[in-house]
Each structure stands twice: as C-alpha cells, then as structure tokens.
Image (cartoon, rainbow over all chains, first blue to last red; front, side):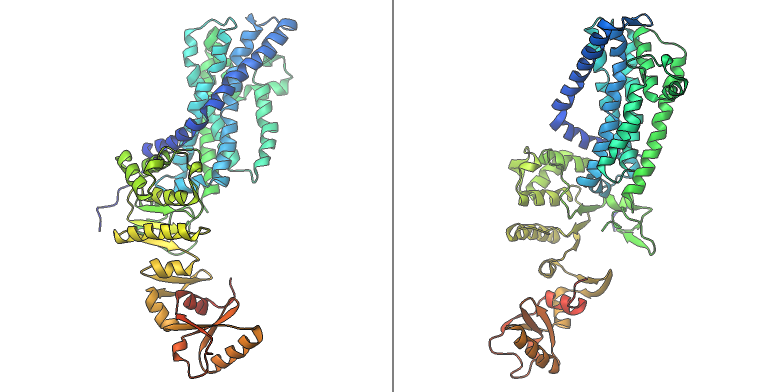
Amino acid sequence: MSAAPRKMRRLEPAAITGVMSRELANFRTYWKGTTFSSVLEPIVYLLAFGLGLGATLVDEVDGVPYIQFVGTGMVATAVIFSSALPAMFGTFVKHRFQNTYEAILAAPVDVEELVTAEMLWIGLRAGFYGCFPLLVTFAFGLDPAWGMLLVPIFSFVTALGFAGFGVAMAATVAKIDQFNYVTALCITPLFLIAGTFFPIDGLPQGVQLVAQINPLHQLVELVRGGAFGYEAVDLARFAFLLAFATLTWRVAVSRMSKRLID
Amino acid sequence: MRLLTGQAIADEGALRVLGHELPDDSKAARAEMGVVPQLDNLDVDVTVEDNLAVYARLYRVKDVGAAVDRCLDLARLRDRRGDAVDELSGGMRRRLLLARGLVHEPKLVLLDEPTVGLDPQIRTELWTLIGELKSRGTTILMSTHYIEEAERLADEVAVMHQGKIISRGHPAELITEHAGRQTAEIYAPPQRLAELRTEAEANGLRVRPAGPAIAIVGSEKAGDGVVPEDAVIRAATLEDVFVLLTGEEAE
C-alpha cells in the first residue's frame, strides 16, 4: 500500500486558483471583445445621457455637473453587467452544455471551491472593468481624487455579490431562456434605481425603499464618495456590500451543490 | 461512475476507493483517480497545453510543465501544443481527453465508454494507448457497450444487466464457461432459420439471434447434421456470452 492518504481540507487555495486558472486560460481567447465593449459602453452612455440630457434638461445634480454625476454612477452599471450576466450565462453553459463542471469535480475540487473560484474570478474581472467609466469620465472634466483608489475594491466586493447571485440563478432555472425573467424582474430594475442617472430621493416612497436596499445603489454612493468626498454612512454601505456578497456566496454554494451532486 | 467521483451519493451500501470511504473521503480518493469522461468536455477555445496545465493544477501536480510535456508525448500531440482544441481532429481530441485524465499519474483510471461513436482507426489508436497504460501497471476501470473492446483489453470482465453484475471473470474463462469454443453462424431465410433453431435447441445447443443470422453457440458439441454445411464457423466470443447471459431483448 502507498503512504497514508493525504488529508484534504475545505476551501483549499490550490483548488480555487486551479479553477481560476481555467477561467484565465479561456479569458485569454476572448478578452479583446469583452474589453472593447467594456470601454465603449460607458462612452456611449455618457455621450447619450451626459451630453444629451445634460445639454438640454439637467445642468447639475447636487452641485455636480450632470455628465460627471452619470459617469461616476456608470461604475455600478459596468459592475452589474460584467458580473451578474456572465455568472448566470457562463455557469449555466459550463454546467449544462459543456460539462465542464463534471470534469472539474472529478478532480479533487469541491462544489464550494468551484463556486468560490468562479465568484472570485468574476469579481476581479468586474472590479477591473468597473474602473473604466471613471477613467472615461476624466475626459469629461472629472478631477482625479485619492478616494477613487478604493473604487476597484468597492467594485470587486459588489461584483462578488452579483456573481453569487448569478451562479445561484444559474443553479435554479431549468432552461436558459428563463434568464429573461431574471433580467427583466431583477437586473434591469436594480440597474435603473441605483441612482446612476437620477438621484433616488425624488422617487416615490416605496421605490426609494427598494433603492435603499439595492446593493448597486450603495456602490454608486461609494464611488461618488470617492470622487467628491466620503461620509460616515459610507462605512455602513461597504458593510452592506460585504454582507450581500457573503449571503449570495452561501446561497450559490448551496444551490450549486443541489444541482451538481445527485 | 458518478458515484465513484462523488458526484452522486449512494442511497445505500458502502463504497471504498483506494482505501478511501466515499462520499466522506471522496476528495482524497479523487486526487488519486483519473477520469476520462464519455463526453468530450475539453475547453475548445483553449490551447492543447493549457487544457493539460489547468488539470495538472486542479490535481495539485508539483511540476506542471513536466506533466504537460509527458501528456503531450503520450497523446502524440507535442507539435500541436499551441493549437486550440477545436482545430484538432476527432482522434486527436480523444487522445487529449485520455491524456488529461492521466496528468497526475493516477493509480486508478476510470474510462467511461472511451470509444463510443469513434471510427475504427481511432478506436484502435485508443486501444493501443490503453494497452500501454495497462502494461505500466495502472489499474483501469472501463465501462463499454462494445463487447469486443472488453474482450481485447480486460483482465477481468463484469457483465452487468439491469444494474446488477450477473457474471464476472477473465474474458477467455467466461467464454469457455458460458459459450464453449466455437460458434456457427447461419445465414438463411427466416423460415429456414426458425427450423434450424428448433432442431439445434432440440439437440441441447444454445442458439442466439445474430442480426440476419442465427448463431449456434458451442457448435463443437453439435452432433452430425445439426450444423449445416454452409454455416460460418468462428471462435466463440464474449459477445456470445453477453447475449446468452443478458437475454435476446435489450433493456
């Protein structure tokens, strides 16, 4: 017989980085398209809303030029679209069509490690892409500020939360077209009532309440804090984002375990 | 197969792989096991060597570069290492899939119908690889619907029917035990086949249908005149055994 069997632990870094290295190898084949759209999209939005609305209807919001108001808010848009959607579709495709997870789970990798790695990867990627709108807004007169250095961290944590949400959704739907319901009922409303394009305090009471517990709204406020000055409440916002990420992480692990293990 | 990799949990019974109790100790068991799936789940946009390197990392191989080189040699894909998988031929992909399951030099390899849907040339190629693996002392557990494959490759065969093992042993011994030495295949119109079958069975011989023909199994024991002159005499095979044991109707 061989030597005593090696004890395996939970959440082994080697398993997590292994799964992430698979994502990186795939990313190297498609990064150009993703990066292109991540740079171009905020520019299009900024031109449409910032210049369109800004030139005709709105001058400034709370003393901030409208284009800078939108530009800072756009970080949240970039984050949700580069985290929730890839997590939903990517997870579903890898599980259902490519049988990737079957191969990964045949190796010494558990569902918990697999889900954690997928979330971390999407979090890092979206954290990075989340900065692009800010960089684009510099071109429209936004002044760089030291507080902005924390934006990648805020984006990363928010993206983790939405990645967990996406993975959990992928483990819940029966068919890929059911993602239409998730997008229409969750993602689009969250993206619109985050305070990106208009301040939420003008909204009806009920909608305001939803906006207040919208993780994306916390991110919008934190980014504006980074650009125009933090407030004490921002600490609570960051704590809220951490809690959101932790919650979706646990839900995603449990949903995926049910889906992947018979 | 899914039970062995911890992706399905048994409702009852005990499962032990390489000294590890499943499912509690399944992770440690998986570390020593290589799996070659029935369905190709390679990353098609990624290069050959990256496909191997990712799995070397998942299996915690210390020297990833050396493991990748070894697998490239095994799959005879050294000159295609930088190509994306979807540029490879079907046979190359199969060899890569097999090599990926061996990236950590496992003690036990699970092959889940490794040659299903393949051309004869590619199948033979894979048989060679599996034979090499066997001669190096790796234990292989393979499932297959191709009885010929089991007969050629296996040291021990378990015949399964409706989820249960109904017979088990070395292929040659199973053939001798259940089928005898030779089989006579007779091609004729259905009417005539029915008559011949009745006659052979009346003489205590076992007969099974073989497509457009019938096969009299153990025909060396037949009395004069039972096997017609125009019958094709061939060596008994494991397929004869399989059909005799599991019945004429497929599940």
